[in-house]
Length: 410
Image 1 (cartoon, rainbow, N blue to C red):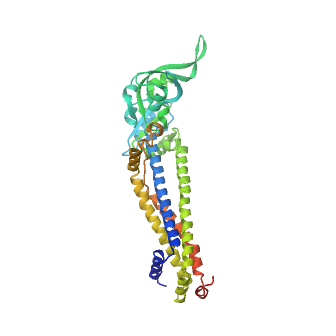
Image 2 (cartoon, one colour):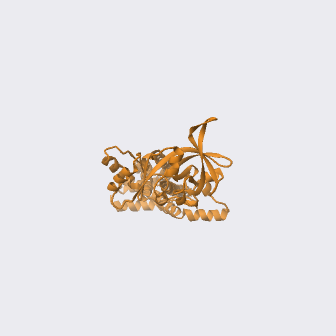
Image 3 (cartoon, one colour):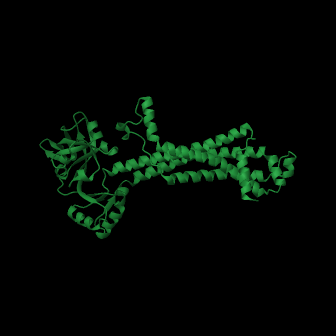
């Protein structure tokens, strides 16, 4: 039978005005359910992509892109200068990192102190909220505190804090923890969790605090952090394995694995909406088959084969689902592109902030529309719709012309 005729029959079935009101209502709700599922998946996955991208970008402003354990910065710098690919800017900074307690006027907090050599204020993408980070890096016993950490301690620019180190000193009164006064010279922010524990000082200050004359290693900041693995492999190969390079993807592997797993789980759960809509397609097609039994019988008498009937009803189900998928695609993409503006409108109407930056580190919901995800959603929805249409179409193909015309069950 001609494919064009099958398509025409499927189209007439899909847009027929002779359907019962209840059957038409079930069909409409099936299409709306498909649209809701597709739109929800597009919006939610786009938000998760945006949040992951925002988190990655902010972390890369504060964490080392490549970290090399070596107390000889000059050797590392020489190796890096020979291996840095063309077009990739690499800044080397010797560092000392220690865990310590900071004591403010009223409270204490745990923190991670990092002493950096060179000119980190130019290589790091930190936001200086107050003070002068460059002066901190050239002045002994000055420190730059994460904005959230300073807020927790209740200190500001020019205030003094006590840095209590995980070491003891022998005194006439016995063993006492070592501590040193530091002056807050700058408040910095990356807009992420490190703000609550980050302390930056010069390498000289960190060396004196830790009584360590040599750096713990060298950290590399790259103009393109996503080429860190390439550079790390070259460094290890050139040094015959004597230099061990750890990239940011390895150091934070568990974090990004958790983000990917969360995206998969949320996508799977929201995909259940599409599955429910597919079951509605089954119901709609089953009711349509029951209504059109005499019509199907007539078509069989006119020469339509069971395979043709099956294809007609499968296309009927796909047309119904495609309407919902297209509506969901348009709605999901539109909401994703204008989500920030819609949030601002909601905030102005409600009179309060939906996302407080001091709590969530973000002032809105960043979105990143990835067409790969959209394509996967559309193909998944079509595949489920195809599967949903198979059973009712098979039932339609089994209707006997004689029995149907006589009003008997097949």
